[in-house]
Image 1 (cartoon, helix red, strand yellow):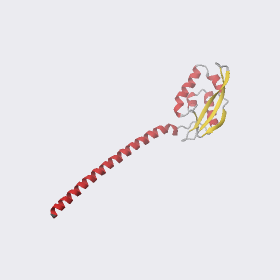
Image 2: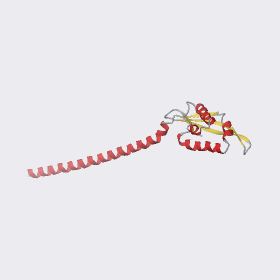
Image 3: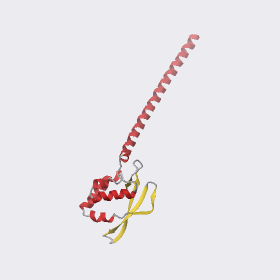
Image 4: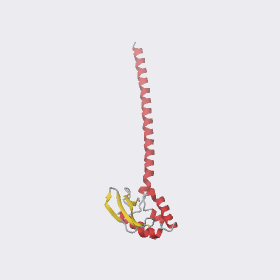
Length: 162
């Protein structure tokens, strides 16, 4: 009877040992998979944040950014001027500026945007709201166009959203 108990005890210990080894292997695999997924998420997040972290074009105030933007426009440096826009709209902004130049609307447009006025309650969190007055040929009246700025949280410079 003693031999039987030892065989059963050994069998149970072996089975428990195998179950424990399988459990630990499964937990290790799940942990490793989770680590790899989190690493992939972190790399993706970094790739999204990188352009914002490296974007240093802009001023400490919306007015300073606007002055830098106007200075680049006066030099017709559209590559530089577009860098004062937020990262996601720089390419589009450059195309629009070049289009204004091609259509011979640039000179009149740059004269109109010189006067930037702060709106009531201009600052709302990381956004600032301004506008400028321009003459609309079609309606033959003066209108206002909004300019929205946002504060880049990584570099602490103000960017034009428009």
